[in-house]
Length: 127
Image 1 (cartoon, one colour):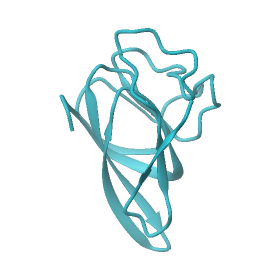
Image 2 (cartoon, one colour):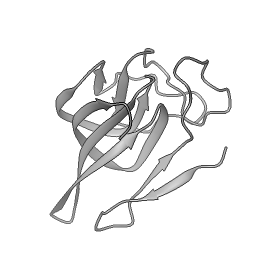
Image 3 (tube, one colour):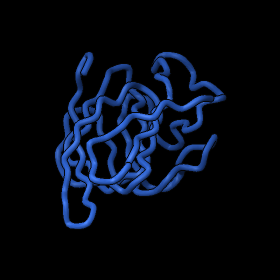
């Protein structure tokens, strides 16, 4: 499956790989590069490390939520296993410069190429 790369406003060439959205009401496509792993349907999950391609993460998530959330969760992989778009705010620090970025996570799996700290999650019909 072809990945779409989204440029981010980072001081480095950090990119976010996003796979096309999957319907939360349908089964997870077998060819989805980052399936939900141990994320339960109806939740947004984040993990502090990269998920194995084609199997999804199996370790304990750093974040699991079914609604708005605020805190601090180290993240490299996340999965939006809901039918809604989820607005994710995260921080990235590179060479003492911290950047705050907001990303619209459509249903499906995603990875960050760099370690980030997710600080807010909000549900939106469309971001």
